[in-house]
Length: 345
Image (cartoon, rainbow, N blue to C red; front, side, top):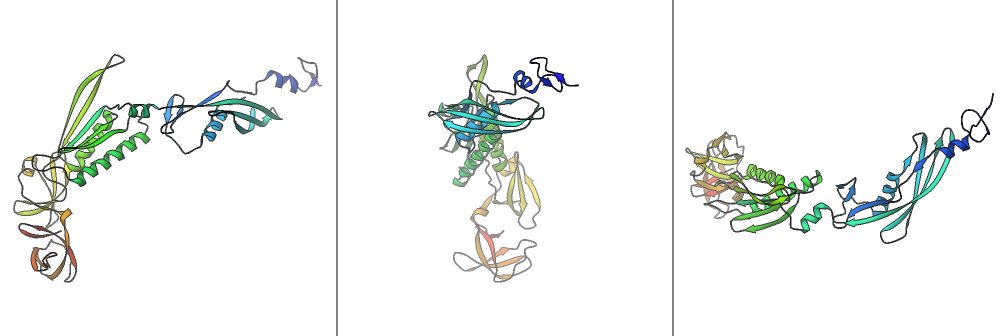
């Protein structure tokens, strides 16, 4: 028995007829307009109040995506196919014409609509703070009473800072930026957007070069009834450098690294690893550094001694042979010249 549509009286299989069903059902909805907020400096995009990393997509693609994201479809609208034709109507305004095709309650459907898209260019939080010279911490990297920082150490600290700031920014920290890096008398100042980044950077530099770490804070004002502090983080380099060749208890050692205030060393003769206390590291003789090594030809080989050719004067000289070093006359080895003679690495 065929039913009758209770609304219009037309014959139907069950309930409302197709036309009345469509008239009483909202298949889609759109807001009055959609806005795409983009940083005019770095290209970052704001989504749901949060700034996202900039990408290489053109503005037109962002506008089309925003229009598609703003479209709501009925839950029973099956296999929807959405096509968007974007028309530019101003310097920062577009009209997105949308075609929607799919199935609703077994019937093929096609709907058309349009929505204005506005491009809003502003400065993101990060770029605004950079432009305003905002900072929370300063990492001061310094040498010590016996030696200054070398150019290579300064450059390595800059690379570490740039790498960590970039990693923090891509990890979602909007304050992970370097406000300024400047070489000063005795070392390097790195001015940073956040105290958290400053602490991580100072610890990383200390782990790489050793030395002492000291943090001090200064009250600079209030924001939303909360005290605002700026931190100064001092990393004071140790007397010894990685790669230094030292004499300790009658043996030659290579400085291999640092663990807090402890200096890690390795015997040049046997390769055995040991450590130096902070007190001993301040007094052991420094004979040279592996960065100053040169190539020297081996003239003859003994169990414990190598006869080599001085790479400068070309005269023969003797040097202790490291245990386990396999070398033949005519081959070359790395040597460091010291006041006590050559050291073979």
